[in-house]
Length: 343
Ligand SMILES: [Zn+2]
Image 1: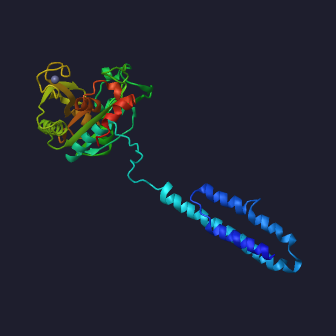
Image 2: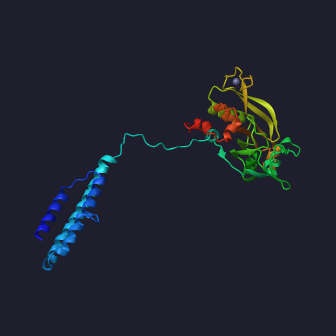
Image 3: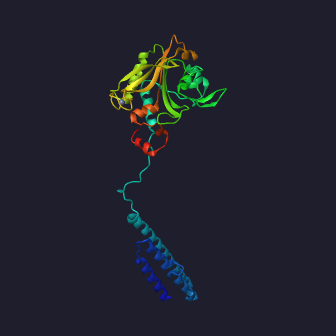
C-alpha cells in the first residue's frame, strides 16, 4: 500500500509537469491517464490487493488521484483552447473582408426617380393607378374616338371584350382617375408601366414606361407648359440643352406639340442618333382638350390645363446612350452592372 501511494504521488507529479501545446497532446494525456486502459484505471485495479482494513483510506487516495487527473485534463484542455485563440485562430484584421454583393438600381428606375424628383420640386404630386383598365379610363375619357388607330387590336392588349378590359396603353388612365376624384387645382405626375401590342425590336417593345403630367387650374397657359418642360430638360440634361416645339396632334390635347431637345451626342451638328437633324424628340404635350375636362365635370370656361407624356426608356436612352430597348428587360448583368455607381 505504501508503495502504491508513492506510485500515485509520482504519477501526480508527472501529470502536473505535463505540457500540451496542441489538441493532440491533450488527447494523448487523456488516453494515457484517463483512458479505458489508462493509469488511473490501472491503479484503481490495485484495490483488490489492498488489505480490507486499509481499503477505506486507499479509496480516498484513489478518489483524490482520479479527481486530480480529471482536473489536470480540463486545465490542459482550456489552456490549449486559449492558446488556439491567441495564436492559431487569431483574427487577422489586415486581411481583406468578404465582399458583400450589393445590387444596383435599374437604369429605368434611376431615370424615373430623377424625373419624379424634378417635378416634385415644381409641386407635382405622384399619382398611380391600375395596369388593367377599362375602356373608359384608357380611351373614352381621354377623347379617343371609337375609330382612333390606338384602339386597333394591333396596338392594344385586350383581356376581355364587352365589357372591354385591357392593359393600359398609356398612363393617361391615371390622369382620368385623378380628375374623377379630385377638383382643380390638380398638379400630378403619373409614372408607370404601359403595354402595346408591338413586335419586339431594338426600337419597340410590348411594354415600356411613361411619366405623364397634368396641371389644371385657373389661367394655366401654354407659356406655363413651355416653361415647366424647359425647366425639366435643363435639370435633366444640363443648362446648355435647347428645346423646340413642333405642332402635333393628340386626341386629348388642343393645341398639341411635340418637344425636341438639341442632340446631346453631336451638340446639334448632326449624327446617327438625331438622324442628322441636330434634334431628338423626347415628349408629347399640349393643352388639355375641353372635352376631356367636361368628361370629368370640370368647367373648361373656368379652368385650363396642360398635359405631357414621355417615355422613360427614351430619356434613359438619351442620358446613357442605350440604343437597344430590349436591353432593359433582358436581365443581362453585364448591362445592369454598368449602373452600380449610380444612385
Ligand atoms: Zn446628333
